[in-house]
Length: 174
Image (cartoon, rainbow, N blue to C red; front, side, top):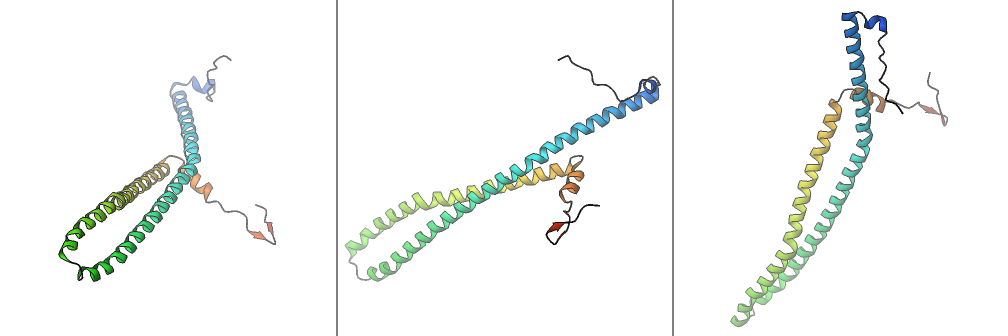
């Protein structure tokens, strides 16, 4: 297919007048630019639902992580309570040789807690930072979309109301 030069909307009679022709050609070029910007905005607005879905999915995964972490902390607290009471009762009845073994047992307990609980708590903190970063990004995208030329048109179109339903049928638009 041969390359065709886009035809100008400026009639040749008007184009031959130097000042008027330049102004009309400039207006035509600006109208074309505005149409290109509007098409680009439409594409961006079309991608916005997918971005929100990704954000919602990330929040759901974060909530699942928090629920697992809460269950882990509950188990650790229960185990700690279970050990604390009997240890206090037994501590009074132990002989000195047995008391020397307690620090080793506590160290092994501390090591297992450090190896399992602390990484889980760090992962939760990292997840919170990631969610905050994602929220900040979505807010910047929304702000940027709101500032784009023609965004008001899409806002008005998205807030248009549907006809009021009566007796199960929609009223016709007049």
